[in-house]
Length: 233
View 1: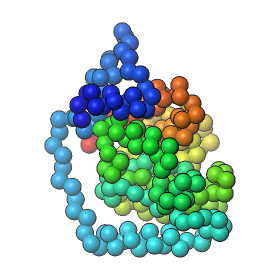
View 2 (view 1 turned 90 degrees about the horizontal axis):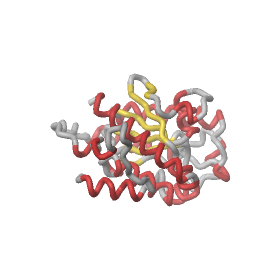
View 3 (view 1 turned 30 degrees about the horizontal axis):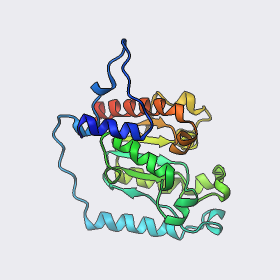
View 4 (view 1 turned 135 degrees about the vertical axis):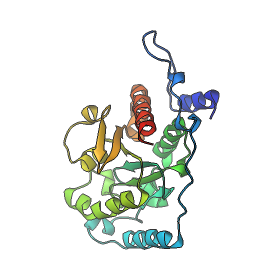
């Protein structure tokens, strides 16, 4: 991705690029796609692995472990590259996701796509899922028993994808996965670990749509993730 294209993506996120006299220019921080490194040959996904994913997805689709199955339209399993280096984990499906069966659609999904493009990747090059696979009624916060019911599904997805970096999207996803009650303001800007996988907390795009000034911080979070990923690979 050339610099002009990247700046176009940043503009789509609502971020005005400026340079401080005391800081390195944003343009000097290259997105992942422009780094000069040899891309390792992607591990071939065998039929057996695809069968495993299919079985898990079917299990989620008919899951009745908690009461959310009574109110959902359908489950929302996950989408993307099954061997992706980057994994994005949100909180739970919303109304649009419940209708379409895919995570992060609608306006929030469009902004997440732009955030992914801003780091030099396409949406189909990452893996996207949620802590919960069913929509809570009225988009309320997940309950403890619901999180517990879905926990094994998410753990299996992480184990099979084996990402090099995880980005938790929003406060509830971060607090749930990190098992903490710390506010997002204290969780972001720090590199956490989840079973030896670096984890970076980022704002939820739905929040950014309501709080436009925070998009500058969102870009800072993405820069941190890029730095961590480059050090990890």
